[in-house]
Structure formats: structure tokens, C-alpha cells
Amino acid sequence: VQFMTVEPGGQGRAFQSQVLDKIREFKSKYPNIRIQADGAINENNLSDVLKAGVDDIVVGSGIFNLEDKMNEENTTTKEFTANRIVSNKLKTAQKKIKTIAFLGGAAWKPDEQPFKDAYAVAKLLAENNYGIVNGGGPGVMRASTMGAHDAGCQALSITYHPNKPKRHYEGVDPENNFDHEIITLDYFDRTKVMLQTTDLHIIFKGSIGTLSELGMTWISSWIHDPDNKPIILYGEFWKEFLEMMHKHFLLVKNEDRMMKICTTPQEVLEYVKSLE
Image (cartoon, rainbow, N blue to C red):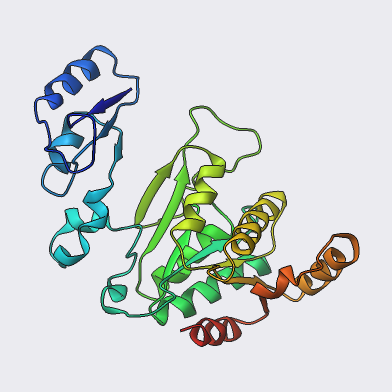
């Protein structure tokens, strides 16, 4: 159930604090129903909105008008800007590539090579002031969070919490100790938000979920060419994959030119830096 905390009609209207009383009343009667609030929510009233019992918050101008007011001590402000600045080191960075999405298999274990690769790449990128973003799950996602942490940086996860278990969806990994979280509406919304709010996408070996992520970033980059987001395919095996695509699909306009195959963490870092 969504409560409007402004008079409906347009962005920029004043926050209506009396709506919080309605939210508290509704929450007391229906404690199991999720509540969303939308309208003029910002760093000044966020705490009151959460205390009233709101589960989901819609924020527009509260995010995009904050950059000039950002400061280290304001933890509430940092909550709003988690999807734009995921590491304290990034606040002063003036670069084209700031945040990098880690995509890949959820089934990989810490002793398996794709997990080790994702960890090593994330650690090196974080050490060089690039923000690490993942889907909050296990495998490649957890590995990238671990790499960011071991570099002394933070990680942002774009997550989806289904209202009941899904047989083939890994969910949020309790061992993925990400620092900031953005909760999305469903599985595909999670991928969409992750791709939209990052500057570069790196894809490791995975399963059909990884294939869907590749498809989404690939077609999005192709549609928005030349303002596309770079895609890194990590691993030698991607060469064979692209050869197969050329053999059996209609890749006649150099659709794969926006993708770069890298096989070492240092090669990834050098390519990212070359895009500055």
C-alpha cells in the first residue's frame, strides 16, 4: 500500500507530516502488509518516515538534489546517495568510470576459479577507487564484495527479496556482507537497476542467469550506441562464445565491438583506465 506524503500533482511539493499518523494507524491494523511512502522524502524527514513503519521509500529529488550538500558526517545523506557513491574515495574522483557492476554465476564456491577471479578483479579495482556493485547474492557477487572489503572500500548491492521462496533463485546471500542495499521489485528489475546505475559491466562465467544479464547489457549498449556502457567479458572462453555467435546469429554490424575480453585483473584495470 502506497501513502503519498505530498499533495499529488507534481515534484517539489511540501512534505505532509500528518500522513505519518495515517501510516502508523494502518501499520498497527495490518502489520503484515508492506507500506510504501512517496513524496518529498529527504534527509530531514527520512528517520521519521522509517519510524512510522514504512518499508519502501520512493525518492526522486531527495537523491538528485543532494550532491552539493554531501558531507562525510551526514550518514543519512550517505544512505540516499549509496547508489551513486559507493565508496568514500569516489566523492572527489572526477572520472568517466566510477562504479562497476559484477555479473556472473551465483553457484561458484570460494575454492573455484570464477570466484577467485571475481575477488581479485574487485580488489584491484577497489584499490584504484572504483566502486563495486553486485546483486547481493552468493558466488561472483559475494566474491566482489569480499574483494572491495579487503581493499578497504565498500560495496553496494542491488537486491530482490521475493515474498516467497523461488526454486531457482539464489536470493540474498547472508554471507555477502555488502555495505549499502537498494531493494528492487523483481528479478529483472534488479538487473535493470544494476545496469542503469553503474558505468561499466564486467561478466564472469555463470549459468543462464548470467546469460540473461549479458543479453540485457548487450542490447542496451547496442541501442544506446555511441553512448553505450562498456562491457568486459572476463575469461578466455568468451572468445569461443563470440565465435559461436558469429557462426549462428546475425552479427553483421559489428555488434560485439563494444565488448572487451580480459583474462587478468591487471588487464581489466588497464582497460578501465583507458576509458577515462
